[in-house]
Amino acid sequence: MKSKYEEGQVWKYKARDNEKNSTITILKVEDNVIRIRINGINVVSKANLAMNELRHAPIDIKSLDASVMEYAGLSKQALDLSGYEAWKKAKGGVFTITVSEIVDLIQKAVLS
Image (cartoon, rainbow, N blue to C red):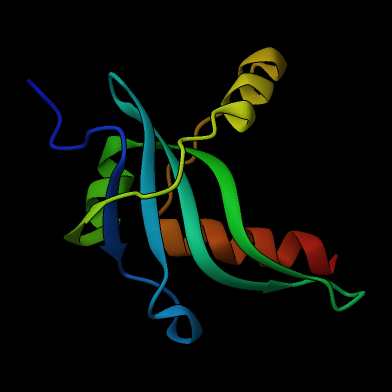
């Protein structure tokens, strides 16, 4: 079955309350794993450093389906796959939680 997700697509998703304009960009589609960039987030560290995007997050298709709300067009940014290459080299895992839960997890990690 062909995925509804294609490289370069931008989607609105069920974002956290303080990130209602946040979107995701599809970077790469591989079977049941979709590589996304999360744009327009508001993650702040203990040192008060702000992060406004997560450049690479591998997510399973079911979790992405549970997150997206509507298609928002095509990205005007180049698709940077450097995060994907680092993930592949490290033999990283795949998120099986929603996109907003991924952002929550990142927020908790930078505050620890």
